[in-house]
Length: 114
Length: 115
Image 1 (tube, chains in turn brown, orange):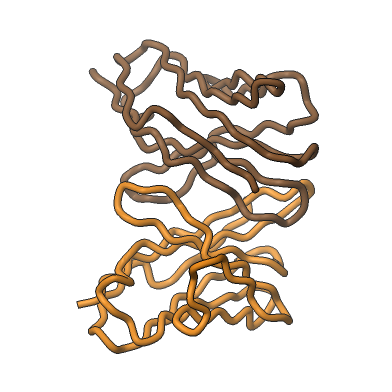
Image 2 (cartoon, rainbow over the protein chains, first blue to last red):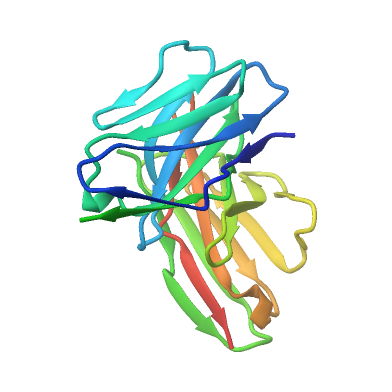
């Protein structure tokens, strides 16, 4: 069974600074995908970034990047130049190949301090 | 981009009544949809997998007779909470995968309050 662990219930960052959210996962599959989702107060799930496990290169989306350490089963999210709008709940998730459901971590609540 | 519409966004019902939540894929066909439940300040937990043309697959501990799922067409899945009780109050959210490899598209969620 897949598991996703987020060990930081809450994090805070100063505006314009950088913050890293941690995530570890476990799976017996060789083909899987990893994701970071943002859930603002509206509770709409927003995809932040995705990583295919077979790709060695870390995914990057503008101010968001990941540090994917496959051997260590670690998948952290780095947010650079933090903005007030980044404040939200962040969920790390994994999924096996095919039309399979997401398995979510418990989430990290990120606060951005002006 | 692909859009998944979930309705209603909020519903308040009396204990003992049933509530139906709809999840529609607006611009693509979804043979599979997923239903999640999220308690306050907690994560999303998979309840069931909705399959068009066949029975839904429920996760362990989810009562299939209480949470009825019907995947009526390639664009619509419904979740009916039967004989609702206050402990069923929660945030329910659906998702539908699209593309290769599939990307999950989420509905807006439904906040159910049973009084």
